[in-house]
Length: 64
Image (cartoon, rainbow, N blue to C red; front, side, top):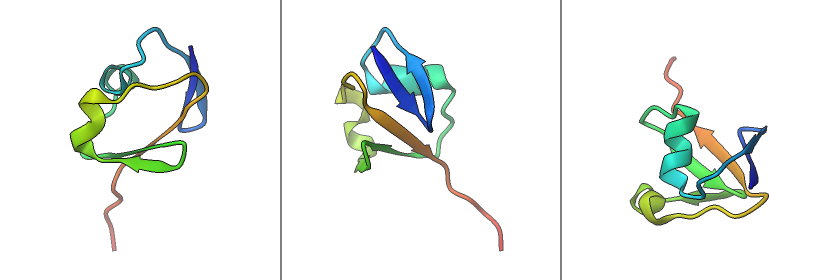
């Protein structure tokens, strides 16, 4: 199955969001949007991706 994460096209075997984020190297804290819709962290464990989904992994930016 093909998806994109932060604009990078990936071929994945598992559709489980949590596994994909771990394999991508996501480090908390972060927010996740799929196809432009933010997914609450409480739903990450149950969320299953579909062919062609676009995942945006967003990390907070600090500074002044």
